[in-house]
Amino acid sequence: MDVSESASISSGIAARYAAAVFEIVRDEGALDTLESNLDDLSAALNESADLRDLLSSPVYARDQQRAAITAIADKMGLMTPLKNVLGLMATKRRLFVVPHMVTRLREMIAEEKGEVTADVTSATPLSNEQSAKLSETLKAKVGRDVKINATVDERLIGGLVVKVGSKMIDTSIRSKLNSLQNAMKEVG
Image (cartoon, rainbow, N blue to C red; front, side, top):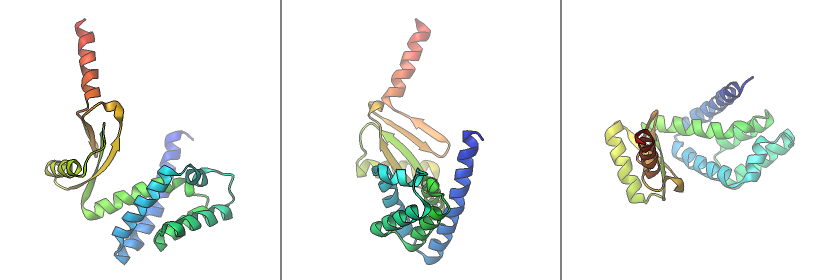
């Protein structure tokens, strides 16, 4: 089995769990709460090496994983359907797909709201005003509401790299310098 097969299997597993949670939460009319819970869960995954270890380490027994993830979900105040699916995933030894499930749930919520997500990388953090203006500009181009997923990469020096779906716009100074360097190599 190669890496792409493994990733595909993980995505498939995550998609099934995400679909189950999404259907239950949508029927309850609580997609906004789910979206907030996903933000909290993503932040916890980014900040806690121990949590990432709990999800991926085979050292923990199923019961230990289930007890730990349920306690974490309770402490975070996650909604019942999400907490229950995390417990089920622990029982089935599938917590390793939680990041894929979070991503898939975000996609499903955005689709339900008629939104598209733009991954924006900038050299410095975007202000709320800049983010709102960029969202409006992208909405005019895409024709749908755009949610900004902003990250910072100081190596860009300045400018932005914007990815919406399969399209990418790179206005970073780093890419312009690289283009200039390539052009100079051709001349010299």
